[in-house]
Image 1 (cartoon, rainbow, N blue to C red):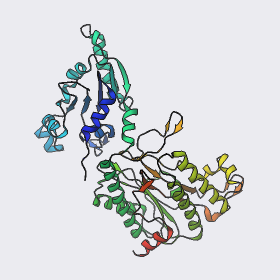
Image 2: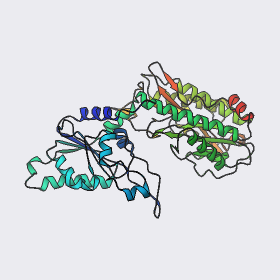
Image 3: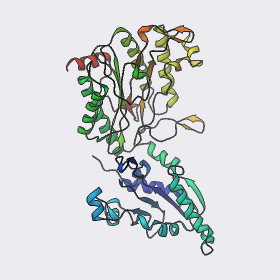
Image 4: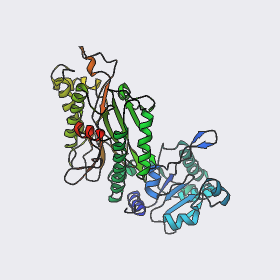
Length: 441
C-alpha cells in the first residue's frame, strides 16, 4: 500500500502559514477507563495527519523557514523499565530517523525550550479549544514572554486557530488516503456479509456484533471506527442505539450501522436485513422506498453538485414514497415545505468520511453549500423511522403494520472526476440480493 507522505503535508501547511510564524499541536492524551486501566490509545487525528506518530505525551512544532529546524518534536524519552511494562517508545533519535523531525527534545523539557521558539513570532497557530489544558499552557508561554522585560520587544503576536485550514486540507483525500478508505470499506463489507449469513431468530444483537468485530480484525481493522449499532425491531428507531443486548425475534428487521478502522481511516456502512431471512410485505415496501431514495441521492454525487442536491433528492423520494404508501397524506411538495417528513427522517443524508467517521471540513462556505470536488469522500444514508408508539402524524393514523420498523441504508462514496465510486459496493443492498445471501447460510 502506498506510503503516506507526512512531510508533504507539513510543507503544504507551512507554505500557508507563511514566514515568522509557529504552529504548536499536542498529541492526544491517554484516558482512564477505570481506576488504573486506560482506554486503548487513539492519536489525535490532526496530530497524526501531520506526523504519523502514535504515542501520547508529545507536541509537534512547525516553524516555516527556520534554518536550524522547521519540524520539531517533543516526545517521551527512551526508558527500558517503562517500555518493558507499557510498550516501546520511539524516543528522540527515533523521531528524527523515522518521523523525519529536524530536531527532537524530551517532553519534560518543553517549558524550558518552547517559549524561546515562540519568541518574536508574528503568529502562533494552534488548535484552539481542542485541549483546554494545552490552550492554557500556550497562553502561559506567551504571557511569560510578554511579561519578561528582556524579551518584551520580541514577544509573540496574535494567536490563530489552525483547525479550520487543517480541516480544509484533510477534506480532499490523496491517493494513499483513498487506498486506506477503500481497504476499510472492503474489510467492513466482508464483515457485513458474514453477519448477514450468521443472522437468525433467537440469536442476540451482541452475537452479531461479535461476528462483525471478528471480521473487522481479520480484515486488518483492529478496532471499529465507532461504536457499532446492531438494532433489532423497534431498537432501530433509536438512531444511536449501542446497547446491542436484545434477542432477535422472528419477523423483525435488524439495522446494522458499523464500520472498521484501517490505519486510522474509517468505514461507515448501514444495512437493514430481515432476521428470518425474508422481508414481509410492509417491510419490503418501506425498504424499497429507502433504497430508491439512496440510489437517487448517490446519483447527485458529482463535481459541481453540493450537499443540498444530495439531501433534497433523498427527501423528495422518501416523501413521495410515504404518500404512495398512504402513511402521509397531502401533496409531497407541501409536506416537504412544512417539514412533515422530519417525523420519519430527522437527520441529514450523509457526512464527510476520513480519519474521523464524521470527518472534518465545512459543509457550507460563505453561506452557500460546499461544492463537491474529486477526492472528497462522504456517506449517503437516507432512512425511515416509524417507532412502535407513533400512532398519528400530521393528523392521520399510522397503520399498525408500519410501526416498529426502522430502515437505514448507507454507503461510502468517493467523488471522482466523472461522478462517484461506491467504496462499500461489495455489501448487498437490494432485497433480492440480501435474501439470496442469507438463504445460503
